[in-house]
Image 1 (tube, rainbow, N blue to C red):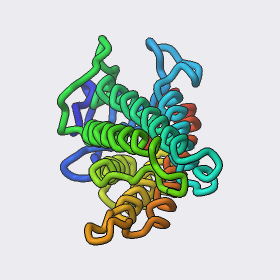
Image 2: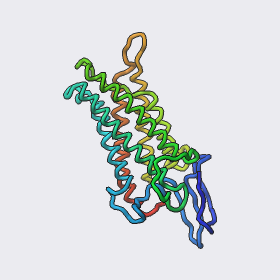
Image 3: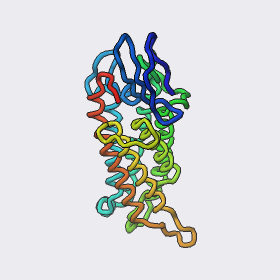
Image 4: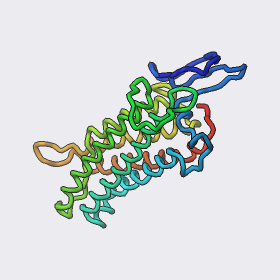
Amino acid sequence: MWGGLPEGARPVSTAGPGPFVTRVVYELDGVEHVWSSRAHRKRALRHGRAALAWQTRSWWIAVLFMIGSTCFALGAVPGYVSLVGIGADGVTFFVGSIFFTSAAALQYLEVVNTAPAVGPGPTQLRFVSWEPGRIDWLATSIQLVGTVFFNISTFRAMIESLDAAPASLLSWRPDALGSVCFLVASWLAFAEAGHGWLSWRPHDLGWVIAALNLVGSIFFGLSAIGAYVIPSSGELLDAAVANSGTFLGAIGFLVGAALLIPEASRGRVAGTG
């Protein structure tokens, strides 16, 4: 939801996936300006001054997601579990989920401390808010919940894998709840970046990142389907899909996270989008 224009500004046009407004063109003092919710949020500012890359939340979000994604991709490789054992593989997935949750928490903090309009964010650091009218708040909140589901499922799998037979090649089965949360959150983030529920903006870095995350979430969802346990036999529906879906989903998030760094650099001055 659009939070308002500066005093004296005249709105020219708005866009966004209804009912959300994610892009506004307005005129102020005879000059046309463009406000975009993602670009506004990703400005690399620190205490009102331009910041070094590593001093920004976006940089840390990127690094934490990259580490978590690497752990998930590595854990899904059959050769890795054969080399280190199913117990260590379970630990790898759990550690990856902790990095995912840390990144998602920072992403949520980035949203709640950014004003939903032109201008600075809250003057004091906020740790929580209730803003369901903002598409970025919904996306980051749902994703954070999804990472917590992954924390729970990977922790349970890690404990079980410490006593599992060495021949097993699947230490963690993606849980459906976490995968659904990731899919919904990624779709909302994609809609925000593209200013519509469906869009094609391959020259927009923010859109590319959101699209990669959406593709990664789709693969995580396919992985969860493949990991469904058939009640009559106790076997997985498709172990190969479960492993490959986890690997490809992690790669999608890894590449998307890496691109957050150049996006943050471009956003050191409030951008358009």
